[in-house]
Length: 83
Image (cartoon, rainbow, N blue to C red; front, side, top):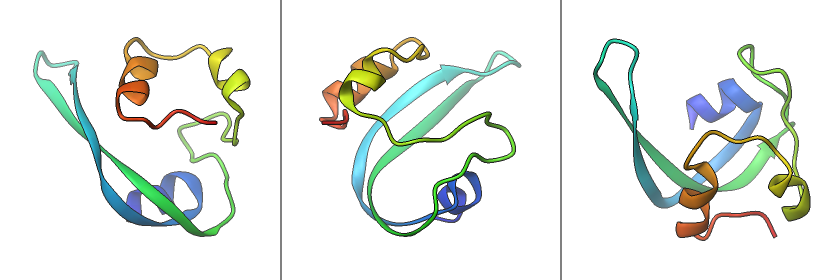
């Protein structure tokens, strides 16, 4: 929850684990990334210092975004795509 607040300005309540992905690390290792479904409880959405933008999007807007490989498929599998 602390990381979400730092990166987005939002306060959330963790509901459950959505899923896990693995990505190659620069040193040849592997990052294991656990993603969680959360409920928004407060705050104001803003981009963190490592992002150019943060915004809520519709499904049509989401489908037009350039995404990293595998993100759309993972979100679909976890039933976590925007409406």
